Image (cartoon, rainbow, N blue to C red; front, side, top):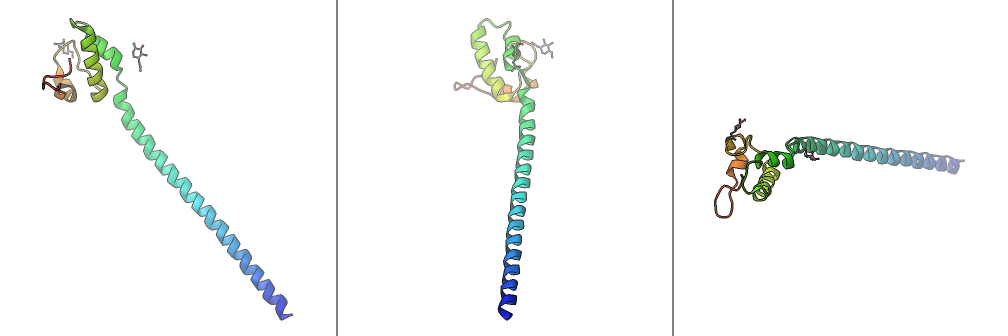
Length: 116
Ligand SMILES: *[C@@H]1O[C@H](CO)[C@@H](O)[C@H](O)[C@H]1NC(C)=O
Ligand SMILES: *[C@@H]1O[C@H](CO)[C@@H](O)[C@H](O)[C@H]1NC(C)=O
């Protein structure tokens, strides 16, 4: 009789332990899931933040910028490098660089303005 009760108690304890372990596992996976949710949210914000400057179409912006250049290929190549780096091309075909401080700042190895 005593032995039966003992076994019953053990069984209950085992079941409780199992239930606790599985609920812990569920909690853990919830935590991971919400962590992933948080991470993907942050990534989304980063993407959005990064996305905005990329909105500029460097090809068409530089085609416009270099449309009056005497060396279109040279102009276009430099402009695209600058545009990719700065996400900005100044308005007009020359000058106006104050509209794009980053674009204005870039220098060649010879310390000349890099961007057309
Ligand atoms: C940029 O503009 C050109 C010409 O308007 C177009 O063909 C090209 O698909 C555009 N690129 C992007 C990334 O929008
Ligand atoms: C500077 O940009 C303006 C438009 O914002 C344009 O009208 C002007 O022609 C540009 N200057 C040059 C030198 O291209």
